[in-house]
Image 1 (cartoon, helix red, strand yellow):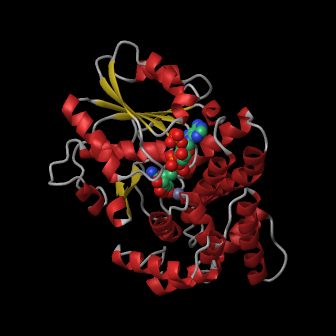
Image 2 (cartoon, helix red, strand yellow; image 1 turned 135 degrees about the horizontal axis):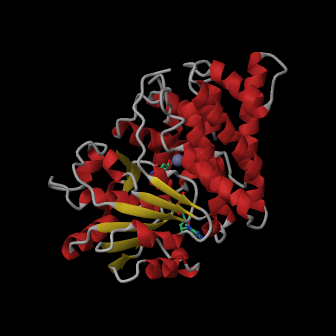
Length: 386
Ligand code: NZQ
Ligand code: ZN
């Protein structure tokens, strides 16, 4: 096992009717900004519950954080927080709203010239952040229990990452009934995103990290079990509860502690979202199967473990077992209604050239757990996904 330093201070309050608990979790004298996306939080009554739970506290609202939140929009929220001197943020939404809130939290007191510098430094220059809490409405990214955020600069089509221990949420409310209004597309995205987060930390090379491996395999098997029910059947509490906790556990640092990590699928996927606005999870479904196929040698031992322990494939020679496990992964994504081919989005060689150019420009030239996914290899992966 590799050395590690595991730190996760986020309080998780889980279960039905838990939104009201924010009344006890936010300081009495806090002056609050509620941040949310489009219409969903108002329409399903979550915002009404939040306003009631805040009681007599002074609060303001910032509406309009878009999917793949932009620096341009978020700077308006930063202006509101600064202008009114607010001291607590409350994110009501999915990964985009939570990530956006993390940026606002770290940009408000940023000492440099322009808060975009936070993204240029990957968050290492954050020295102070406004405390914040989360009401999660879309299980997918794990942002409710981690210290990372992905922010887009529309002007340059750049999707960049910030990470800082100062932007862990103080608390996250995980009420599975809040997912009942999610459309099938977002539910499928959530399953694929959580699945890929697990794979990026598990499917590398063995370091005898048994707990991390067994937990990762449990998360993957849970997603395989509940995925079709979550996406294709009417909402049911138990499967949504399991989905919510699985997505948080997939990216809260636990399974990534002490193991090598890949993340190439994510970095290539981010360029596809920035350029062509394909949903985050859908980019992962395009890249991951081809990446596993092409990187099979560096990942051989873990791919065989994945085949045996996650998909129960034990017969046949090594390459056959690996091929079947990758095919099963692709079929799983497709069974949820998520396409796995670039061409199904009307994209071809021109798009691949653009992605490679952006990867190079963004310094994404040595990706993967072996740092050997060069732009040429990324090109081969995308060509294999056509
Ligand atoms: O804007 P509203 O009307 O709220 O609609 C949203 C949005 O259109 C809707 N939605 C959310 N909760 C709902 C609901 N609709 C009905 N009922 C509900 N309960 O869902 C749409 C998508 O929301 P979004 O927050 O964009 O989705 P997701 O949670 O998948 O987040 C994606 C973002 O997270 C980043 C991605 O790059 C992307 O920007 N990621 C963040 C990570 C992190 N912080 O650790 C890791 C991930 O790998 C990922 O990169
Ligand atoms: Zn993701």
